[in-house]
Length: 359
Image (cartoon, rainbow, N blue to C red; front, side, top):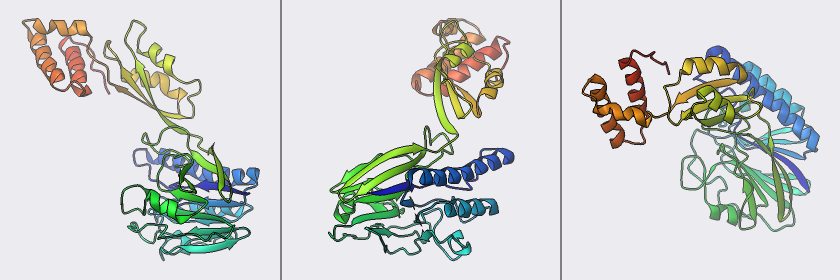
């Protein structure tokens, strides 16, 4: 039985463009910490192989600190490490893959053609992106021999419809005859899948970088032998992105309703709280000021609705009634558009000399 750590899509040195320069630098440093946790996991599990299936880096631009952290962490792993460069960190004469002196235990696939590596009791196949796009199947018609060995491939590519990112069809996977296909490119963990006799998986990214990458993130621990593969997901991320909805309808007030739905621990969360329901326009600035110290990062979005009793005032023969009639019509035309509800709420506050609530 072969014990494997399968990771992908670290996207080290992501720009984190939506953050301040100071916070972006902090997040890049936290990304580097993932490498040490990966190495620690390899040591704890007694892994025989570490497979990194592409986009380990976000681009050709690499900070010196990242290059040093990457080399040091991989050198501390007491087993072979195989890297299949992806579309973000493709292999080229200018890439880190050629400019850095890599430890002896690290093997980097450098060709767009499949490369075969013989290991004790196992044959490993891999290839690299050599540019930002690749429209051929990474398995490239592979059919492994039935020789009693364990056959594994580590590639970057997209299972599904044709794309410029190494399209792989289910039939390509089944026809390969591989025991396990270690994939990278998709940032959501797939769980262990099977086509024909071939097991395959995406581990997803090991740490989210935005609200399109929610929840626990990590790598896969895989145990493989001919015709049998088991895996388990191992969380690595210290910081998680979450979206939480809080219905503020009722007399309790927005703060009380938000606290009711929060998980017990929030210090490791970058959280977006979406306010729903009916009630007075919440003061988002005050809510964020009160709650932000409990979170790694927090934003609050108002998607609440105008209370039904306020809509009744649209019959008034006054400016308020005229405004409400216009907004009522807009809300009926596009009932799923929250902007009209917000416009109605804040417009009413302005007409009634209320405080304008900053989003």
